[in-house]
Image (cartoon, rainbow, N blue to C red; front, side, top):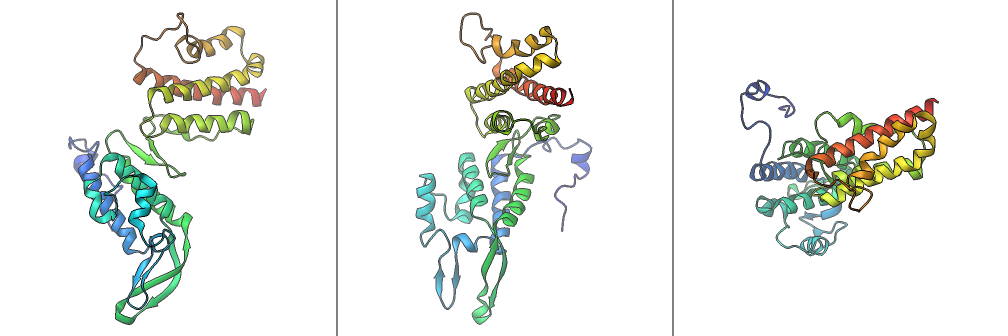
Length: 280
């Protein structure tokens, strides 16, 4: 089997001008091929059911009319059946269906082979987590090279890829400090900032959430930093239209660039501050 993670000559040497990203039409073709691979391995029998030469259509957990269920979920037509419709998907359609597949896929682990008429395997036991992990691992190989880069998270959400150089920071587990007031708020802010098509307002909210975490830590920060250093930590959030709305705010800057910097700055600062507090 070919290792799709290997970089061949022209990509490895930087001589292929198209090596950095793929566009929607080819992504749709690659997605269809991946979907059919899992379909042929019966990873959708539990949810979508199957056809038996003796029993006819055997329902899965989504019932007998999957197309209607898909419409009910997304309020969009022309999504089902996936293998015949997906080449005409929009980007939003594709990402909807990828998340839908994550919710419905399950790895078959036990069943019986119906040999009459070469009917095939009918499975009765499935492992949902294993199916999700396999699908996520393989779809992320495709998503990471699509346009600016995306990934399917462990929770089944399409997220923007982490900027180069910040992977370790975002993925680093925070030193456990206060699960309710610190840890969960940081994870929520990271998710809010990276969600597919998150708006500038949503990104600002994520930065503000991190600044609020800093505010919660402020009494402890005073014990590990000088008063000047402490004030400097809050100058960005308090003076650049993140936490306040008044005529003293500096807002004449490119948010698409500076919001990213602010987010990573505060995330790194929180990690550092908590380590300082823990080590005191």
